[in-house]
Image (cartoon, rainbow, N blue to C red; front, side, top):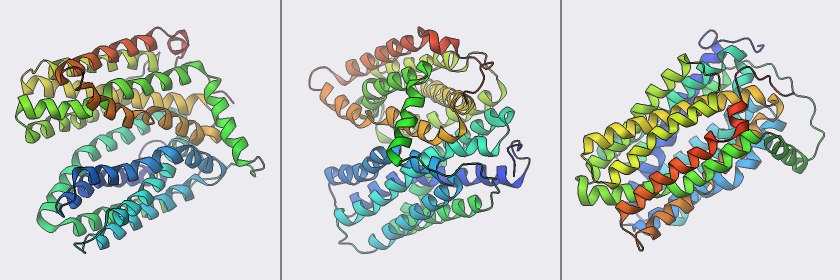
Length: 406
């Protein structure tokens, strides 16, 4: 089909968006099921961390490879193979956990396969979107994608936890393996007219071209660098410090779980609003909205009532979803279609590469200052880094009237 599809107007659009609803739910549930499968078989917290790291490390390391492959070949085929591999990896995990003496190496290896496939799937989506949707439908399409992610962050872990509790880890892994396979089947239904020319450049040349595309647009690389440090100095530490404070002052895991779920609520609202509001300066204005999430850090650090913290987390989730929709749309509108997956890979890599170090930093900070003070400091850092974005002339100058570079 040609790139004239509008959201929900034809089978290809519905298949593309429906597949992601399945995929996001499964992806959000896998770390939960893995963690409890290990803990219930008397593995230590350190071993849980090792297995989860085994799923994340290939994702980070192979993102740039995945984005380059997606730009060189059919993005539809790359996405389908990625979903099939993730489904098979979960089937392998389901088989492993039926044996009470399964090893960390075995389950970690299956997790590494899952993370590798994820590294190919994530950047592929960015390039596929403008292949399917007309330019005036990119914003609602990205809004639906972000809404699906928010729903997945709510529904996936909840469903995974319930199935795990009543039917065990093997059934839980099997259920979400089926969701990946269902996602692959939906993707197979898409009809996309491929317009790519024969690949003649080397792999490394393509990788360098993607880097040059990002480097040539200051608004893009400045935002990526700033968000790298946000993950290092704010979001990474919050993942560690939040539970510590919740256990000591807010009522423990149940209350913290409910608070974290509020991010998904805010994400759904943010995706809906972003689909209906067209900003003249999308990235700059969205950065202002993201600053509204800073009070969440302060309220947790100050041991405020849980209801106030939950509301602030809703605002934080709203800001995340709102800027994600506008950012994805800006990327798709400003970069050549043939390089979008590489650009997306550099974007995701830049955003998440420092995140694990931020988690370590959050734990180390408690040896110097209190968790509360450390989280308040993270909130102040978020404001300072957001101010860099707001002070950037290139980000302020990026408007919806700017034409795509070709």
